[in-house]
Amino acid sequence: MEKKRLEFYGGPWMSFLPFVIFIALIILTTFVWQSISDGALWVPAFAAILITFFFAKDKKQYADAVIDGMASREAIIPVVCWIFAGVFSRILRMSGLANGIAGIAAGLGVGPTIFAVITFLASALFATASGTGFGTIAAGMGVLYPAGVALGCDPALLAGVIISGAAFGDNLAPISDTTICSATSQDVDVPGVVKSRLKYALAAGAVTIICTVIYSMVSGSTVSAEAAAVEFDPITLIMLIPVAITIWIAIRTGDIIIATSIGIVLGCATACVFGIFDFVQIDSDSSIPAILAVHGDAAALDRTVDGVIYTGISSMLQVCILALLLFGSISVMRAGGGDVMLLEKLNAIAKGPKSAEGTISVMVIVLSAIMGLNAPAILTVGASFAKPMSKKFGISPYRAANLMDAQSNTLAYCLPWTPAMVYTLGFAVDSAAPLTAGQIIPCCFYCFAMLVIMTVSIFTGTGRHDLMDQLSPEMKKEYGWK
Image (cartoon, rainbow, N blue to C red; front, top):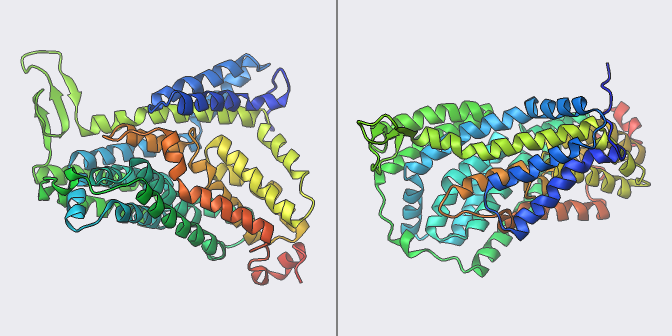
């Protein structure tokens, strides 16, 4: 049975009101008030849902839509992943591993510019192998970010190249949800899609490296005196073992919860065995990181619980709450049919192959930017709009899949309200070098490079007939290919 559409006073376009209010307040929060706290984004997100409530004709249906969004699987999966990744990241951070990496890098003569490039390449490699953008951000911001900051790298640049690496892998990885969604929605094979999009990803990656080098040199990043003379306990480098095992498991399984669960246990065990952590530390003045710390007077009853597990979970609470509020707004938009109306309006613009490709791109960019999510945007556009449009104008289904995937990994990764950016800020704000979204956005080079490259390819017609010869005779006929 089809659900009744959620109706609003002012018409169906009012289903976008939560995002209009939220984005307007976010712009003020980020660029005017220069907020560096995820918690500061709660108010705009909550206010957006609250204000829109009064425009809904059926208040009960509106409330159900908000709850459905917050309780949906697509909302809960990243929240759970963030909690587990937050604990694992905290263990690595408190172990002193970042200082060890910074000290060794300085000793080997690795400067901030080279380290920033290495950070992008490592992030891109991990994301491509594991297919997880959020897992890449957790690993990069947990280890490479503090190490690079200690070495003297520009903090915004480091955060930007980590996001860029995550977007690169999300775009290219065969096991990425965006790759699978884009391929299946067009009824084409994943290997063929990956092969045909490789040229775009590598070109955007090369531009990212060039921009990283230029930005680092212009910003005047040099090896800090602290990094050059940093004193670190070599034993902390033993934590690279649980890191390597966790990455290997993430690559093998493609599941960040499985990988970080094992990583948390291995990390805690390794830290305890080698004396980096105590299992339980009952001392209010202790400087030794503990898995579980109980602070306060031993004779008193008012003790507080602390430690890497507690702080790892608590550091993710802000981004988790914000994400739930955002998913509530997404559900309201869908219940009101706003996403479908938008796509139908854009669909009417397509008059030829070039405008059809541009329309597909705009559809995915707008939806993924509004939602802050790429896979749902691809699923919304793919089968219902991109596929029939491609058949009508003779555009290769591989090309349509590449357009959707590439464009969905641009603004969805670098706007202030997107989960990827908020997640990155959550790690940065909890470090010695907190950042604002406004500082990071200009350094998300891959996102902007891919946006430009795909736009240019639309005007030049590059890739419009990719792998058409590999289609079945039936599909060739459907797409008007002889």
